[in-house]
Amino acid sequence: MNPTVFFAEMRKIWRPLPTLVMLVCATLFMLQAIGQASSFTHDAPQSANSLGNSADNAFIADMIERYGPNLDRRTKEGLAGELNRQKRLFSEGLAAIPQARAANIGDYDSFNRYQEAEFGGGRVEVTIDDSGNDVYSDPLLQTVNADQTMSRTLSRIAFLQQVLDRTAETDRRSRDMAALQLRMAFARSITDVFGGGRQPGSYDDQGRPLNGSPRLPQLPSGVTQRIDAIFGHTERYGYLGSDVLSGVTSIVTLMFIAPPICSLIMTLPLIPRDRQRRMLALQYASRTGRRVVWDQMAAISATTLITSAGVCLMMAVPAVWPIRTLMSCPAISVMAVQLIWFDLNLRSYLIGGAAVAMLFSLAVVMLVTFLTRRSSGVIAMLLRAVPPTVICIAPTMLLLAPALFLLSGPLDRWIPLPGNEPMLFALVLLAACALWVVDGIRLRHREPNGV
Image 1 (cartoon, rainbow, N blue to C red):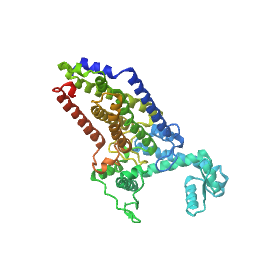
Image 2: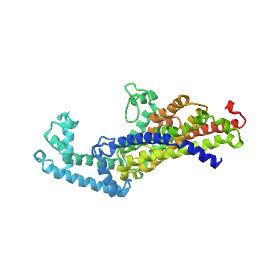
Image 3: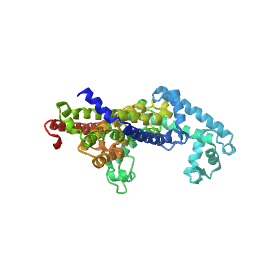
Image 4: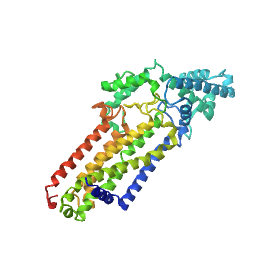
């Protein structure tokens, strides 16, 4: 590679107009990432975890800051102490409610027994008000539910209790339910996924079919071993609700859309512009000019990496900044259903997702620019570039990116290997680079009119 020619090709790529268009496009994707992240930042007190509790992220962030993000012995002792403190606060609130005093209910345990008896006996009617809140016919439950402080304390008690229950050695139900959900995910067809993720049927806790439902596939041994490792060492993992990881996953998904599009805006015009301005004859007049394809290949690769890294930073930093205190939390949580192949925290998961997105962007750009290298005009270039771009980005955006590193990824039903998504993108990149290399070797012995 000739450094002088390489930097000349870089200057041809980084022109004012494409750069401006790329920045506008990246800004739009950045705003979309911030909008998706608002569900677990701006509205944190109303966010709910996967179990339906209203334990807000601000409370969880406070627990993480005081006791740590991993469920080791120290953290569990701290959460147990916090559980007792929340129960005392709830008891103090009950003491001020006349209906509780009349029913001889003075603490959380007696209130919980009363609530189970009322619901179990079918004596409580539940209606929804205009704001979407539950309204109970029972006066005591209605008073507790209407009191924002007591309602939030009650939800925190339920959250802390479930965290501690799910870290107990005797809790096998969480492990069995996780395996069942993965088996149901593997049983879904692509049509079901696009149709809203419909369940393949009804099953009991062991995955046995009910009501004539089809039999579920067995999990690959590698997936089963990973599930056993996760639920056998809960001290490694955290206790975030699934909304935070889902929000980070949505940002990662956008990283598989924005970087390749912005990189193509920069790199696509390079070779067609040379054809349009009749530069081929000048290039093929010397031995150095005939080797310009290698410098163009290098310039396209460098531009793609620079653009992809910049776009990923533009989307990730402002989107996750409000929850930066949560980024040290493990991506695997005992309170969530997402199980991943690697023991990563949210920060590492985001960085790993950005790295895989950059690999994917490089593979797409190298493939699409190769397919459009013989175009002589903008229209011809777009007609050749848009279809393969859509074919590459659409299935990745809908299937692979939302399940990046997850055990429920669509590739895991056939290739249950950790990190199979980056392996696939690396193969595509190698194929695209091989096409460039073969074409570059062939061009050394051809005339401009045959190129």
